[in-house]
Length: 85
Image 1 (spheres, rainbow, N blue to C red):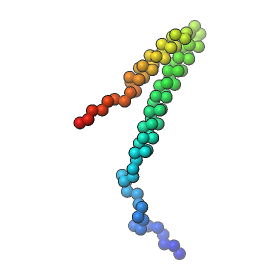
Image 2 (cartoon, one colour):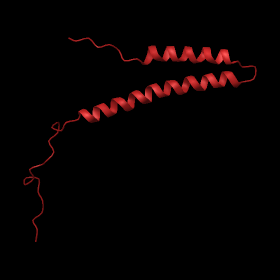
Image 3 (cartoon, rainbow, N blue to C red):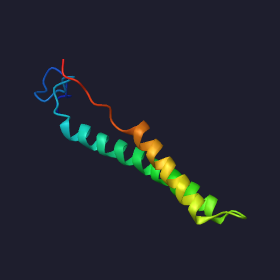
Image 4 (spheres, rainbow, N blue to C red):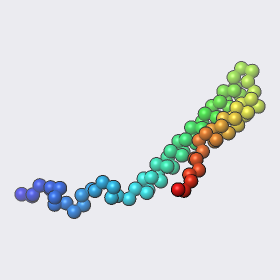
């Protein structure tokens, strides 16, 4: 009969903090960036279309709202510059 596997016998036990995670970090940063900027773009497009197609709405008013939302979002969501200590 086979011996049960014990933690003492394993040569490949996981040690907390020992695995390379650079790819996971890159994927997480990419996903968060796409979610952040995609949400901003979605909000601006929804505002543009709502103002354009509402009764007595206008294309110019929607375009202005789009530009204002995108500019404000860019200033609020951009990554802050980090300074080296």
